[in-house]
Length: 166
Image (cartoon, rainbow, N blue to C red; front, side):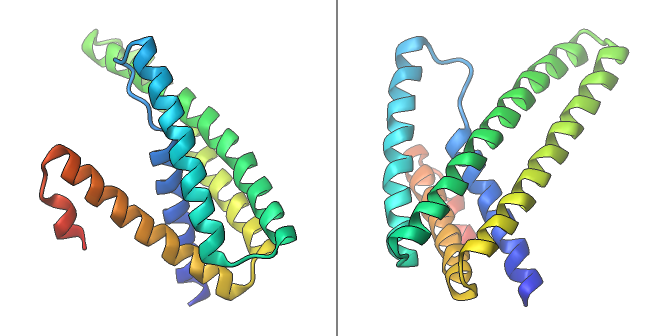
């Protein structure tokens, strides 16, 4: 059971990171600024909901927020690097450059492994801060939040897939 909760926590936190750190590379500067502002607002609101759902005291809240902020930065940097490498990989594949493909695949795998290690470290730190019941609430919050995100994205883009995920 502990392993299942741990795996769910890692998966949920990874999805949270991906959703929070995703950016499209085709937007112009004004759209990027607007998107960053919206991302900050979304992240702030989500953080408030998380802390409320966990019903933490101020000290525990501060510790959790510090851990989340620290790992958000690490994940963002790794994701940015991976995004750059994937762009390079796309060019290498289109130009049939086997050596570049091999190098970039290695870099992408290294970034992926670094992200997994970051998630494991974060999970370990969170386990040291939260009680088991709070960890369970965190997992449930992340699952519900992910469902809500997919539902809102589906509604925004007119897809029906989110309903199938529930």
